[in-house]
Amino acid sequence: MATSSPSESAKPLYGFVRFSDLSGKAFAMRTQRVQFENREGHLLTGRMVTPADRHPHNFVLFAHCFTCNKNLSALRNIGNALAREGFGVLRFDFTGLGESDGDFGDTNFSGNVEDLEDAARYLEAEYGAPSLLVGHSLGGAAVLFAAARLPFVRAVAVICAPANPEHVTRLLRSKVPEIEKEGKARVMIGGREFTI
Image 1 (cartoon, rainbow, N blue to C red):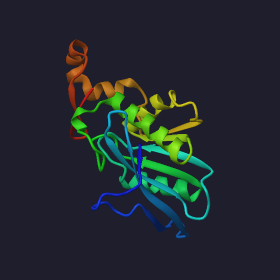
Image 2: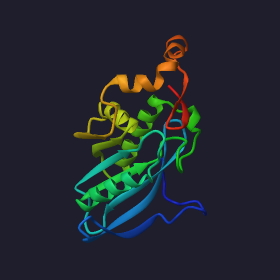
Image 3: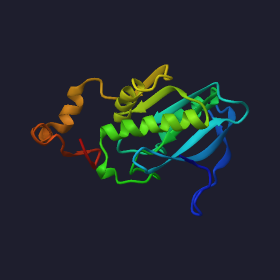
């Protein structure tokens, strides 16, 4: 479910922002604060960035790492560069992070994949289906899983995502026996605890 009216403390929904690229050339983009419900009923918050001078030729869904949020400067910069090239880009906060509702401590990898699917369905209904998924770190791993479930996705790009399961296993090594016995465990990644 999409919402279009901000809370009293929220920033304006629409804005035109002027940026300069690395060469110093100025360009304008339209930014919009968006909110949508995930399948658990949590209100997730995102930023939709589009070119100011034309309709996007394709839409991108951008997933941050699991200990970051949509406002990480690298994600903003990449999203802005994509908008400059004519893409519409949705960055959003996973459940319990940034401006999104829910408790991050109650989330897991599967839930983040589901958040991506819900964000893609929102984007499809309100703007246009995303043809490109981009993910950073473990968000990159999540977009790989989500892409297989979204028939309209034509490309996936990952940034610093785990290249093989051994990388993630090293982060979880002390919890593997508990995961094998209980089916889940609380782990620390990037200074935050969550369930695997």
